[in-house]
Image (tube, rainbow, N blue to C red):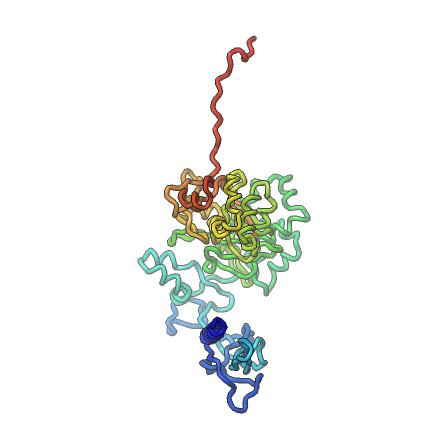
Length: 481
């Protein structure tokens, strides 16, 4: 009987997966052989395979008769060449004695080429959109969701593309008179080549002249020595052209520096856009746009690291070794090592833990509770102190944390535990390739006292400060003249 149930379960499971993919197991039709080409069920045309290759582009400038009020808007016809995905009859064995054949997609393209044209409305060559109309539209009572969805379409039709692109990013930097930044970059021929490139678009978070004012000659020489200059400058340059209207909260930008990513943050105010990069405010977004990229200006050096959050915790083991040990035991440490993530970790220092509580969580029987505890300390996306102070709540993998701001000091509490302790941040952002770490002097309470008593009887989670009683000095022990 048990074997029969297993057989039925396997058949049902396979059928469920197959139906979920849009296929129904069948036998081979008359004359068909395994490996023959076929047309998949429920798909009259084979799905396209891989990215299309642009083989040509034409522009036709539009006018008011086309319903376009703004200048420099073109109808762009882009011609692509793309391979199609191949389908063959394949056999799938579920268990001995049972097999199914049907038309399934192969892993590679079959070489058939397909050409197609995509017509869009875009800026004419050499022009770009101006300031976003999002703020004005919201102020006029338009739905923010509507504007967010159709902003690009509406802006093109009403405002057009008033910004003339400079020939290259180097022209932008010279026009903006960012002399101090140029002084350092001119020492780097590979960077200069990227600034002047006709291809390979980039986004430059250029340092304003004011950013260098606090540097004396010695500090500057140490900061921009022959080894570090290229790393620092490269970490301020992102791959791809990303103007202001394509920036968004939680965005991850790969830089020219090896293994260094930048994290974009945005204030929560929908009517006034203020963007931050690694916690530093972008003081002049879209300061200049060129054919090969865009320049945003920042007034401070960007903090960055090529190490992941896991690496930073390891390097500062004197502060975070207990939290890292708990994360590894819970099989969560690898999550903190994924470079493509954008995360915030509220890492309790070693002094925050009661030893008995740690021993309790490390027991194999409590691994589920341990995972809950660790994941409550991990939020997303990366929130540096500057943007964290703008939030009311931040999500974690378990629940959400309430953010408090008093006298410019940021603190957090677990919104799901009442009453709960207010935990201050130490105010120092520890940047990582995949996010940021905030050191906290206490753990974030995961359980109520009643729940904790059931999991770890007789144990407290919070390290209570032991205040030594004040001792009255012995008069006889006080030396006299």
